[in-house]
Amino acid sequence: SGAKLSVEESKSFERLTKTKFTIDYLSLKNLEELRSFFIQSKNETYNTILLDLEEKYIKNIIEQIKYNTEQIFFNVSEPSNNLRKTACAGNLLHTYPSKAMFTDSIAQFLVEKKWTKVLMLTGPLSFDKEYSDSFKSSADKFGLRVLQEKFFVDNNDPRIRDKNDLSFLTMEKKYNVIFVSDINGEFALKVPFNSNKPAVVTGSAGLTPKTWHWSYLRHGAPQLNGRFERMHQRRMSSRDWAAWMAVKVIIESVLRTKTTANREILNYIRDSDIRVDGSKGIGLNFRSETNQLRQTIFLVSGNNWVSGVAPFESFKNKTNDLDTLGILSNSCN
Image (cartoon, rainbow, N blue to C red; front, top):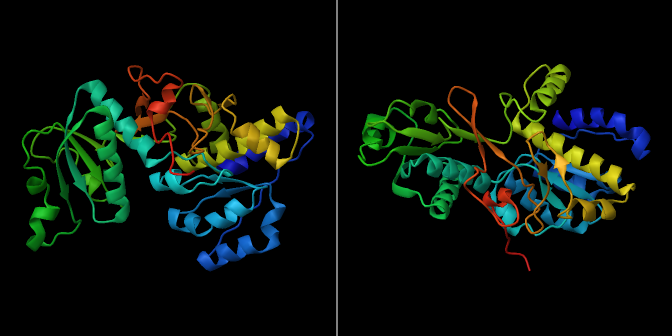
């Protein structure tokens, strides 16, 4: 839906770019259909392909992505840290933030507030473990103390009370922060106000990191939200924003380079001098090694309001403060 909005907005630039932007939607049932799409020559009719796919599917087509060097691909929904480190495809760009960007933003907020003693609660799924692992790296990076990590199971079986009862899980006495990792979200919702001692809850509940949120009221965000809501009769989500931004990057590149040649557009996109307005308050561009879009992260409180925007002022980088969030390098040669 975000991509559709961006294409609609491109109409005001058609006279300047002498280019008409169009969009097709393709819904695939399984991995076999996905592979088939890339094997057929049909996919080559597109200059740009937005991937709303989980990591396992992107990994299965990464060789095709690398082979199709004349096409530009955008990951608009998968936060995997591993994908940024190992994909090694120069034509695969990420407008959706990595888990490391999310957990770094949380860690910065906690350091700013001097809430530095953390109890971690991790769910049973692989995503839960990956999110917790990312937070542990962020804690090391910014100087938080992880006192203990406990693993929960979200059911009411009394035989595993020590894994599903918050009074048992939060018996540790020294923490002032609880980081909970729960992709399903049901257990996480129980954590605020139910710990054995007063604590800030963050991660999958309480203070949560977001790519985008309707309550941000600066830098043209209300106008962007308004345009989206008028088109789709709902609020803009983080994935909507990432797709909107991907198409906007292409439009901006065509406008600046005055060409529709993909190779020239990709070179322009990956140039450190590019700045694209994402209604987040600062011109955004991509990291050259990981192809990750540098961007601010919104920290949204339990009452559904933006309570902070990372990176925070006290965290500085010699070239770009946005590089205090996320992964800066990969394992590619």
